[in-house]
Amino acid sequence: MKVILFGATGMVGQGVLRECLLDPRVEAVLSIGRNTTGQPHPKLTERVQKDLFDYSEDEVRFKGYDACFFCLGISSAGMKEADYRRITRDLTLAAAEPLARLNPGMTFIYVSGTGTDSSEKGRVMWARVKGETENALLKLPFKAAYMFRPGIIRPLHGIRSKTPLYRAFYVLAAPLLWFLGAVSPRLLTTTEQVGRAMINTALNGAPKILLEGADINRL
Image (cartoon, rainbow, N blue to C red):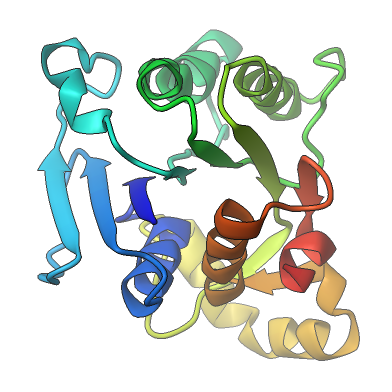
């Protein structure tokens, strides 16, 4: 299959890209983002897109793909709801809407998060906005769409978060994360497991649309 990947330079996106490049079932990957990954590979094509809200000048690049793995995201810390909604919901739909129109046979997988509020009415701002985003994606005419809701994600294979606070957390919490993964794996997943689960879901489907950490690990 041919995959479009958004957010390949982020922690989750790096893991997903790694698994896509390793998996013989993935024929080609188009990475779209504001920066390149710096990883030369015969399966990888990279497009620098400075305006992630507007693809109208070159939509034809989107055509002919089987799956989209959308791994872009930011922390809501210190953000107003309107600003967070624009970066989270509006930016995601700016890419998803033309993809659905051009590739009706596509499977779209969105990285959300555990605690996302599907009712859109809860008290937690980021959870409401993520819920809005998920619900809007599920209304688009894709062949299938799945919402990945991982909890704690442990980076593997030298992958690091771009956020300094998160990097510090992973360094300090490394022993605890190892113990948590051994004792209760449903609470923890890894960048490798997320990438493999996305590929398997795009190729074979999944038993439900909203996939929590334990579901991701099983997939």
